[in-house]
Image (cartoon, rainbow, N blue to C red; front, top):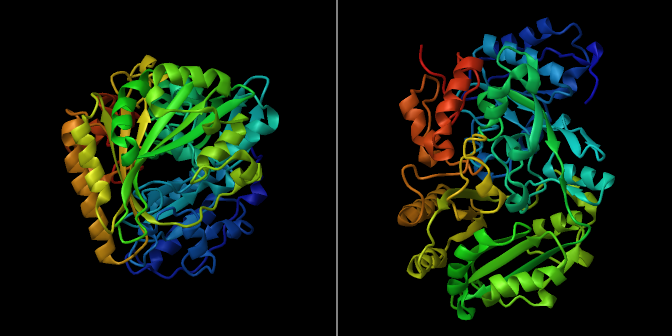
Length: 538
């Protein structure tokens, strides 16, 4: 952790022009004036304060936006962006935002699928944690402290610096920030062996609505429970996690086997549904369906299933397992790539996956930028009974639709995921779920027509999937944020009943405990957004 100094805690008062949608310039000035009163020295931190008249404001705002949907001129913009360099700078921001009726959005990596970490429909400020990205790895104790602004790619890199046989069970996209990823659960290809990222958190630091900087002991077990899968933005500003590192072998094996409809893709996916959740815990096989060969006006289009995998061991052990459990896939030695665990992180993050000899250097994991941004919308579900072949064929028909670029990703559960109680953390999707399924649509255009066309596809997909997925409630994954399943009122109170429409989908019965925790730690509901946990009414 960085050591703060009073001289570094500074702010320069700036004259602020009003945004077209927001409050008056007086509100901006009042907020900044409040900050100067809260700090003893306010002369040097101006480099960490960005307002609309600052030449760097737009570049800082857009630097961590991962979906073009939220880059348009009509998207609400913050009155101020602050990039604190130590957690001790955060309490005054909270105090002054509350004093001036400004909401706070906290951004670590910017991957919120609905932009809630940097967009609000009421006047707001952004706390961007990009400068809080320090990582301290203790290989002997098998733990690491990682600040919330760090990316999972940088966490992986720092772990590998210290040990080739330690890893962490988080996601495959290296630019995702650990703050939001872990607080929403955080799945990755080791989830069947070690569970979620949130399942491997042993301490945390958070700044609450009263400006208190708390660790696990001082926050108490209820709040510590809530932020490991319940979403941190409802409860405060998470500044750091202490995580338990996990053992990985010196050699792991990865593969990516692709089969088209002409090579029995439908039948293989149908078989995969019962095989993948019951494999050895060391073996993870995901399946992704998408349209391919459509460059010639769709005349040669087909559907391809990509079976991509990480196995915690060598190919000599993997091949007999596959021959016994999933011989239909036809995996052969030439399909397998043996490598270190850290190399597998690069292998699985590349699209398409490429051999280790052709990969980017490991330093690529330290890169926070994400090229080729697009618009996207994701709908998530959980499957508890295998989808029949006819049902899979209906998904394929949706993927065939012209002018739409979409894919359906299936993530197997079972293994460790079935052993952890659904109330152990707020993340409830445990035993009884075969796999998570997500329908993703991506597009490049920024016209209203493009948006509506792709969102219509997303709604058709979600409607089509209803008979094949969980119900009462129809479950969803918090980190695949989806405002279409329900939202809170904007700028006014939201009832338990209204919030439970979306809350039960993400958390099932854990939603009730989250509401109770919220009522204790933030009874005035300062930390709120369209899908934040509401406190109970008095």
